[in-house]
Length: 633
Ligand code: AMP
Image (tube, rainbow, N blue to C red; front, side, top):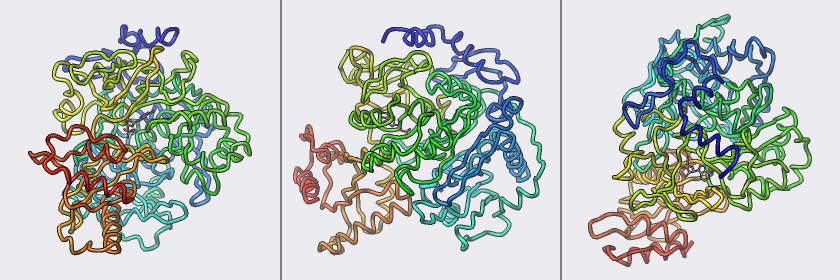
């Protein structure tokens, strides 16, 4: 990598303080910071120490003088056939009312508020209202079911949960409140109050008197609310967002206030090239990190209009996104490779039916972008399509092209270069030495992590260090748990995970979590879940289960019924997103003589690769069974 961006990146590492002091000017500080970085307790980084700011102020209030009437939030729902537009001034009013509601329920600085909501404006109001009063939001993706939700409630211990009667997916009602009630019943630390947006989608919504409150009633009671911004020290927590790992217990990624604001503002300018007054359309969900950073906070901090889309990419037809681009004059778009692969299967004419001339760039992330999909969408749109790589933990891109600094050529299948602020290395697994050109290595970041990245794991500093900074015994570096390789021109390619985490349609799932859910089925003795390559979704979980009572799966019909039951168990506990594509029943799982599951060998077989060194295998016929199950289809 040479040229203007290389120099920009080098400066971000070698003159770190000066670089970030400059970027910090992109946001408003109520009180200036006294120190750019406090790194006295590695690997914990404290950015913009003593500085006071507020995410909600930066996202809304700061723009009121110059763009009060400009659209801030445009809600488009093809599920309930509705469109609503909120100017910055109107968003300010809504967020103030929501902040007043939360305060009236006793929510104060540092308290947690769990948001379990469909893609509706009230979800965005709630997030921004939390930010306004210094409360910590924890948004849980609406596709997660009761067990996932209960785990998150118990870890975050929210004072209040904000939810809705239901969401809609593909025209079908998805009842949220029933799942929430189930989760609260299973929780050891239930919330004091539940605020419900009643969309009228689920007339049978159960309500618990005294605990459950109606958003519309509270909203009416707080007309003309004017809630002062709570100025937070830069390192106070802004939110928790859970992500899967190799254990059954999801990790609460904790983010700060000031560092996050600066990282988002800097990325909006240099990476996404979003200018104030322009429009951004990010097709993710507020339940994911992409939704936090680039549906809610990033575009608003940049003074842009953001689109909140509730619906599928192919309903009413595969032209819906391009219609939105046309109608809202979208300039910057952000989506996922799976979504593009879905569109690729549809009639290409949808792309030419709309005037998408406003669109300047499309960004894709969340999973590997295969070369042919990258090429297809680039040819179809005739604008730069930028693959970029990041994680829930980092909150903004790690590897990306940075067109706001330099228009570097795009290489299909590559997320280009390390983003500014990231001292990125590819390290050999054996000894943490640097891998050469073309040699595979673990994608690692030399700490301190740049602003915007996770500060710690909620409530568990020790786990933060142990999980992310202990891959190599000789060197304390942050591991992404991804393999990567760099070519002679400095372009990076991501080659897959180093751990047992799988990626389904851009969503990270822990195989251990799915195994635990399947084990809840009364007839499952033990189970192994691995990821299998899938043309559309990248990967799909598949399960190999040993049953307790073989008589219950004696014939093909019983097997099929048992498979359905196991899938339903996963749906109920984790959500359909984690449902295995197949459940195969075997008599035993391949294990070492010491009883350790040979998951990597199963994974290799599932992907048609050599299962590797099997000398420690206790019973070789176990692998034959896996092979036979896979061949049997
Ligand atoms: P999540 O935190 O759920 O967004 O998942 C992050 C993981 O998704 C990364 O560690 C990668 O394994 C994968 N990932 C994200 N973006 C990309 C990309 N552009 N190319 C390849 N893998 C990606």
